Length: 418
Image (cartoon, rainbow, N blue to C red):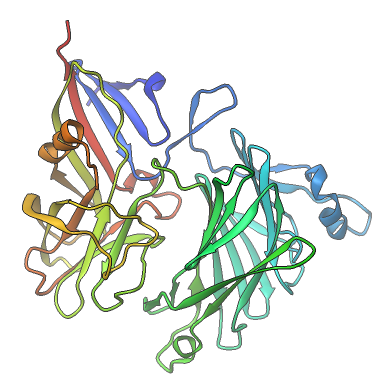
């Protein structure tokens, strides 16, 4: 299909294309696909890490990582407009990673960590042996830092404490999430309790997060996994914990999660998958997109939801999409507080499982309603009868290299003005 991108119409999570028939298609993503450069233009997200001299305000930390000849090690840095993400060459409890944006920032490291040098491979920064029986693997994803704490065996520590140094920020704990507020009281950064997953694919949300401040204005955030879950005889190592540090969560940011009828109080917000299942344990997935503005003379002629299925067993499965009728937040939704939905099925899709199969669902009526009447509370995906079956889709949190497979909405419209 021949089309050209209208780069001047970009926003944080939207691309616009002019088609051959002069209609316009807007592609809306759950996650940000552009960042705003210092000149005000929107640029493609680029997670490339480059070597750069250590920042001046990190001199104290850097002095501890100098080589025998006094030569300064270079940082690995990613810049996106006013946002910078920085990884020290050598891990240090006083500061291994730094995020700064608009003059505010935070620097953090693992308490009691070993001083090990990082290795970079295809956008991943790894600190092997940062703790005894633990590796740290880091990835930049847009305006987020995803950290995987890899517990290699049962002798790994029972809890993990991060030491934070704050610049023009104040911490605030709510549930299992720490917000770092700027001088205006607005959230600038946040970190949420991760889920953990073992080598057999079993996962748990049973991780407690605590916040402690000391007189030196140093903040301690501790993650304590459920010791019984880790010690279970069926547990297969390595086990991965994945805390995520991100910039402020605004309307254009990620809004997808799934809920489980068995883990009623657990929140599956940062999972790399959206899951749907029937039977003894029911999964439903929720998605919400920030819609782009369209002009008065623009008429929507079509809209579809695009997902990538990861089902591999070749079995036939069906999913349905429904309109959600109540507001919800991705980082707090669970089975108990999930919103009600409209029984009317907007569209359904029956397909056989196949690795990386694109699935599309017609949501034209739903999108038109959002534009005409407001109340965009997103949509829900479920199995029709919820008696059996399982399928999963890549979420907005999927790994680097899969950006084009993240959920998106494609809206096509024409202009009849004049």
